[in-house]
Length: 379
View 1 (cartoon, rainbow, N blue to C red):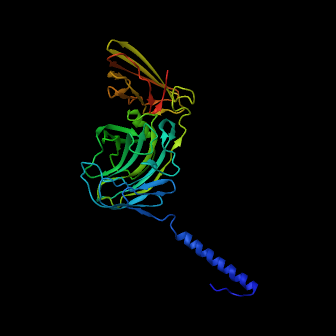
View 2 (spheres, rainbow, N blue to C red; view 1 turned 90 degrees about the vertical axis):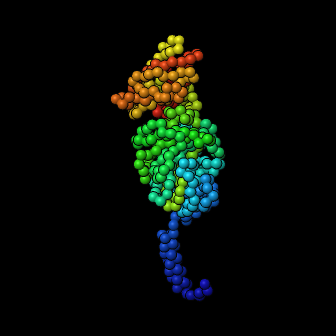
View 3 (cartoon, rainbow, N blue to C red; view 1 turned 30 degrees about the horizontal axis):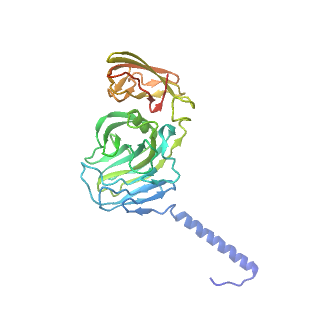
């Protein structure tokens, strides 16, 4: 722009008008520009960061056909999903967004890995966008391992199937149903050769939901597929497509991990914050058999609804029958579930149940108890 020579008063007026025009132009650009430009990732294991705190990953591993994901400010969408794989085998990919660490790729500022018994809550919300012209599941993955590893395969994978389209099923076989986080789920259990998998399958599609991840973690601990001293390493939401998949979207995702569940997580019977529950385990033993009378006391300030007590019977022991609770399975890591007519333990209250069992070798008692995933003291 050529320099203008004006009277100082005129120059001040022109400068003011010019500044006003520039400010208006800047406001217009700010109003119309997107908060963050969408980023498309087509590399096999390519990824990008959104919101400065989550990682969106393409994660194509079951096919050589092209797959692309476009990261948005709040999630991602699958923009290309070529190829297909047989529906009786593994899916072709897992495009997803996550909080935590996945094969050394850690999301910025994550609190993970974190010990399970040191997490007070892990609130999350998810909104999915579905399509009809594909075979896929909408799966929310939670990974657990005995060590705080940030690389490789973890020991246990929890899968929450929000939706499934086509002739597909989870790994393993259905082992029953469960009420977790206020919803009823089919429960499937199995392994894929590298890790154990516990799947919770919604009977009908869920489009969006807010919940506490720890409800599913504690259920998994109670079933003996993880320990309270294990580590939560990542929380992921995405899709497993077998055929096609373009148009699938995570419209929004949020994940927070609140630590501080225990001042002394390493030893529930040691000093620190008092345990939320106490278990008295009284036995009567004779050669080859025994009875156990178990009293569970709720030391907390709120009732425990749908109570479940998890513990591991020593090797050689087996449950014959139980009363005032169901105890399943009959050996190994078992769970005692409160009866339908008495599913609550009031604050400061207790419930008592018992069972008869057999044993071989020397007799021993369980060494740890978890009430709905929370470690208890032993009386």
